[in-house]
Image (tube, rainbow, N blue to C red):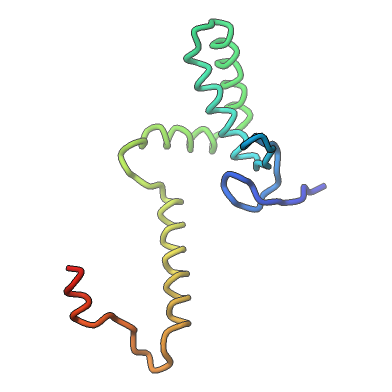
Amino acid sequence: MTQAKAVCARCGEAKPLSGSEFVKGKAVPLCADCHRAKNLATMIRMLASDKEGDRTSAADAFIRTLQNAGRDVVNNIAERIEHFGNGALSETEMQEIYDAGMEAGLRQQQHAPANGASQMPSGRDMAMYC
């Protein structure tokens, strides 16, 4: 049986939903990836608790979650931590940006004048912004 797809409130993608979070007192749907990310973030925060029981429970839950998530998820998390703050984009992020740029360029091309001339600002207007 396949799950119905709906739009995740966090990532905006149409995926099977597996959880929710509360935003301004209202429950909003989350896909499995965003739900897992939310739970892992909560567990990481709990590791800094001043209560030993909270830290132990968080560590146990964190390990269980990673084991159930699979190697790809673990590698993605490790890559994010490793490259945090250096501005590096993953291959997937670079591909998404490239694809979005290509789509925008194609849309602009479809709306360009029929004679093929591009609509550039005048030389004076360009000079004003340089």
